[in-house]
Length: 132
Image 1: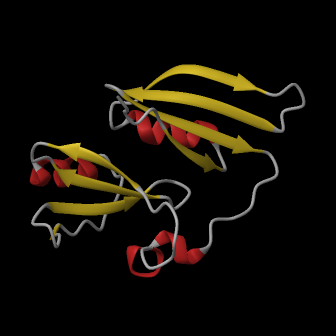
Image 2: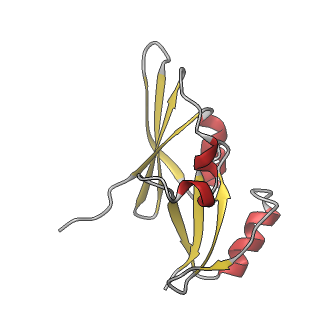
């Protein structure tokens, strides 16, 4: 009956963020900009997943605590989104080769799945996790 329709994030530089997410295969498919330029909204799609990106001219900075799982996970609220992969080692190599992140540490989670985290250009946490 239900499915996840989209995930939304807010960013400082819409072009920089779009280029970042395109590296993972996201494609632009819808956008809207206010007449006064105070807000831009872009929708990107990866298979059936939609990423809605907001870019406000006047934004509030992401708190430093939200840029690391150690300090972010204990705080109530939405934490991150994850991109699934078939092979975590290949994903690590991809991220390093594309200069997306230099420091990548694969971990095994409490539920037995391998994963690692990266930050997007605004410091937003993105998990890369091996599919079941």
